[in-house]
Image 1 (spheres, rainbow, N blue to C red):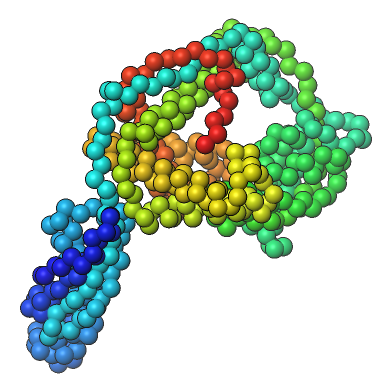
Image 2: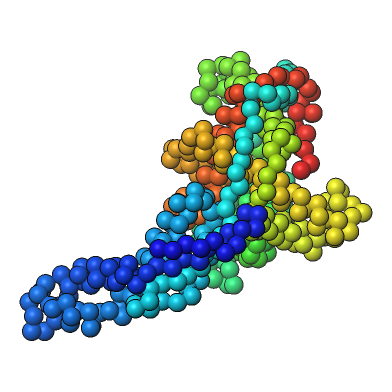
Length: 440
C-alpha cells in the first residue's frame, strides 16, 4: 500500500492511497474461496465447485465487498500509522478500481487537535452557597399542601376555573386521525398545573360538566416524540366532572400521607430537598465559572466542519426565534452581521470546550455506566405523566436519543473530576442570587 499526503492545512488532511493489484487479488481469492464452500451449482456437490467456475459466476458480486473492505482497512491502517484521530468519518473518493491495476482512492479528513491539558490544581473556583431559612421551609410546606389538597365534587352549575380539577376523556388527533399516546379516559387534570402541553389547560377554563370541546394546540419544538415535534394537533375533550380543592390541615396525619411519622419529619425532609436544590444551583454556577477558566487557559484550533455545524445550529435557532417575534435583550441594537460574529465566537467556544472535556475524560478514563443512562431516561419519563411507556419505548428504539443523554452525563462527570482537583471555596450568597439564571 502506498500513501501520499496531498494536503496539510491546519487540521485538514488529504491522502491518496494506492493498493496494488496483488493485494486486491488476494482478497478476491479469499472471498471466492469462502463462497465456494457454500454455493450450489447443478452437476457439482456442495463445496466441490471448481474455483474457475466460482470465479466466472461470482467475481462481479464480490468485487463490491472487496472494494469496501479494502478502502476501510487501508484508510484505518494509514491513519493508525500516522497517529491520526479523525474528528469525524473521513470522506472517501474512489479514483479507480480495476482487478488488474488495484485500487486508488483519496480520503479527506479533519483531525482532532493536539490538546495540552492545564494543571487543574492551579484553578481557583468560587462555588456560591445559600443557607435554607425557616421561611423557605414553610413556603415549601404550604406549596406541598396546595399540591396535595383533596378535592370534592362541585355540585353547583358553574364553569371550571384555575385551580379546579376536571375529570375528562380526550382523544388527540393529527390531521383528523388519532395518534398513539394521545388519548385518556377519566383523567384528573388540575387547571393551571402545567401538566399538559401549553394551551391545553387554558382552553378548558370556563368549560362546564357535559361540555364537549375541540382544543387546538401545538406540540413544543423540543417534544420527545419526533413525529409530534412542533406539530399543530387537535384534542376532542369531554368534561365529565368538576372538582374543587378542600382545605388540608397541617398535622402529623398530613405528614403520614408522605410516609413520614410527623410534621417535624416532613419539615426536615423539605429542608433537605431545598438544600439539594441549592447545592445543584451552586454546582451549576461553579461549572460555568470552571468552563470560563478552561476557555481562558486552553487555546487550540478546532475542526472547521464541527465549528460550522455548531454555528449553523445556533443560527437556525436564532432565525426561528426572530421569525416568531422573540427578542434576546443581549442582542438588542446589534445588526445581523454583529450577531453572526457573536454566534461564531460562541460556536467556537462550545466546540473547543467540548473537545477539551472529551480529551480530559479520555485521559482520565471517565466512563458513563448503563445504570446512569437508565436513571436519566426514567427521570425524563416521569416528566410526562400518563405517557411514561411511550417515552421509554422512544428511547429503547432510538440510539441517537440515548447518545444525546450520554453526552451531558459524561460532561458532568468530567466536570466533577476537575472540581475534585481544583481549589474550590464556598461563597455565601442570598437564595435569590444563587437561583438567578445566568445569561450565556
